[in-house]
Amino acid sequence: MIMRLINWQGMAGIAVALTLLVMLTVQKLEAVHWKKQSESAEQLYHQEQAAFATTVASYRAASAEARAEDLANAERVRAAQASINQETKDAFEARIADARARADRLRVDPETTTYRGARGTAPVPGLPAAPGRIAQGPGEGRLPAADALTATEQAIQLDELIRWVRKQHAVDPNVEPSRQP
Image 1 (cartoon, rainbow, N blue to C red):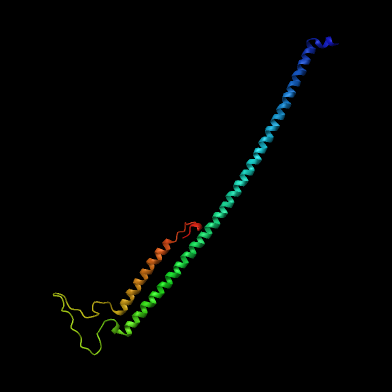
Image 2 (cartoon, rainbow, N blue to C red; image 1 turned 90 degrees about the vertical axis):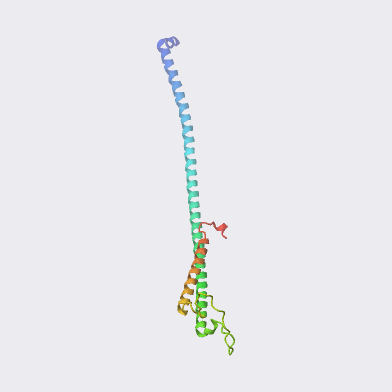
């Protein structure tokens, strides 16, 4: 019986069986290899997904923090500008009230505008006028009282406007809260 297996057909059958066995073994080894590769790729995929989720969460947190800092900075700038506005308004109103009060005093007591000497004494003669110039009396060449008050008020307005602009310019909206003056 062994002799029948040793003939060329038996040998071919054994060779085919061994070839099939080797191919089956190789197939099994490849399946194990690709299963490990697949598990490795799946693990890498999950790691990348977790890293992506972490990155997205970090960016969202940073964005929310930056938004909160921007709102706080905008509120700081608004408060500083409102304070400057109120200070300027108060200073302007005080200066205008003072100028108007002085103008009212000058209207009531015109002697305070020029020195007329002691009462009851004879006026002292003035210095002679320079040659070629016309002598002017006190108060000549000045604005009328109403116009002088208007000019004073406008000068105060311009002065306070300049101060306001300088103070507003000093408020830096880009300064970080930790570096505020």
